Image (cartoon, rainbow, N blue to C red; front, side, top):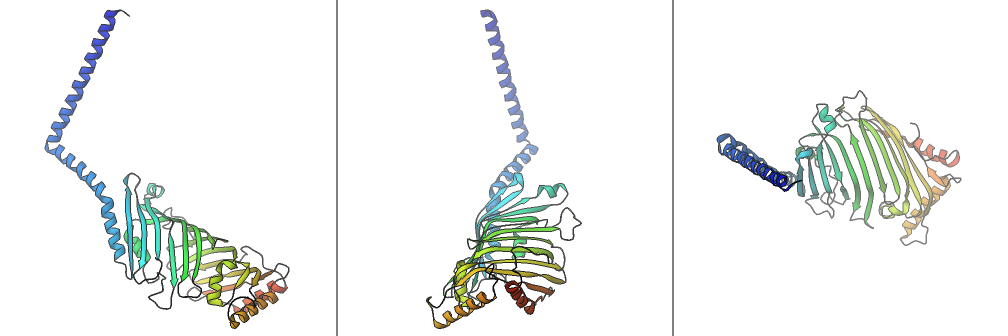
Length: 376
């Protein structure tokens, strides 16, 4: 390319660049003039208001939530922070704590985060509902000699509290890495029986897909009891029914009895040196009657004998309990078990004591009960 051609090309580029700058400058000038008019000022004001509102919204939500929690009857609640994600229709409540106002020794409830977000699948079907996820919740039930030292949470309408905090209907709710404790700070020894690593999920609470199923809501629970017992439960239910309708199965597999020795010592006066407990249950309700069973199994049980520390009555109790288990267990499986039928009116179901005793004898001398859910 000749020197003259190169010079001409540079001139063209320089002229194009200058024209572009002039065009950009004129656009900015026109925009500034437009914003200077009444309509532009209104739009600009709205933009500023939206930005300020977005910045202030988490603080306003935090204030509102803490005000609601502070007004609980007999309890005090607080959250540390609130984050809002407008682009995905979600907000997160972080570091939640609810404490009974009378000193108990453990908060009723804590959680790292509670998140609610719009359920887009239901939104496409014309329903505005939310899904919630609760991370690392812990619940503490406390037994005490007086009402002031007892903590059960039953004296508060927590469903209404949740409705006050969440303006949308909840259609799916899940909890991850949760724990539930039963504590007694006044017993000897002190008791802390707990279930850990809890995962549970409830789906189709509102039945937004208008399912024709009799029990449209599904429930699943998985957890670990005292480091050893595997818990699993499944259920289907009709939560919109005036009276509970559900079909539930539950299993607890091989919890080491030694893990609950403080509970056994404090309330039963016995001490387990070895052994495992399992339990299986099926419960069904049609809204009027409850029907089902509980099937507890004790395996390889050894109770401490007369050489253990404790009073004379404690040693006698251990010896008697050990003798009953040893006589009535199935020696081929080293298993003490029974089946407890449950049937009757939903408000007041009954257990058949004679059937329970018959189950013990059947397991011990006829055929051992096996692990797992049996047909009801």
